[in-house]
Image 1 (cartoon, rainbow, N blue to C red):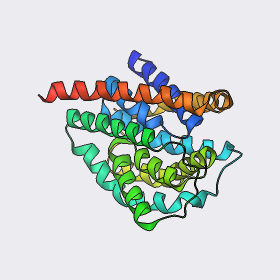
Image 2 (cartoon, rainbow, N blue to C red):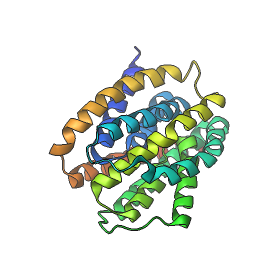
Image 3 (cartoon, rainbow, N blue to C red):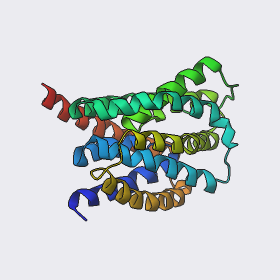
Length: 247
């Protein structure tokens, strides 16, 4: 195993442990950091496989899970825009895509900070679910980070941390398999990306175990602060490196 793949294993472990603890974040942490090590396409390819696998496993082991169909409308709508996102992944300049990844993460940090702790329960809203689903699919296909739009929408629905987490997990499980098939048809999985995918999945498996065990011992507020600081630093680094290359 090369030094780059060893870093991939560690990054996948950290990213998935965070997701298991707070409900999302594996793509947001892994993709910008791994992009700096192996490039954007292998990093995104890993999360296109890893996010559905992790989400399904976390949903199944969560004792407070919501019905899986709770997130079905947004998940199904997201599939409509995944092909456009995958096309962007395969056609974009590497530095441009790195810049987009960094900007997407910064946007996600702002979304997370602005949508804190809403306990009011709301009924689903058609315009919001359409917007969130389509935006999520576009970002999921191009950067493997479909979370920001769903974070905002599921926080708006309310119901507390447990319901928020399981909605995010069920969304990833529902939309995952078709997203993998779409990406495979577009040639995302190849000799350059598969080693990153396979080694990344190894790190992700240990991340699931660690995150579930750590969840009861780490407060949501403390972990959110730590993860937001890490995300901001990682995204700023990605933006800086891409910007210097483009200028």
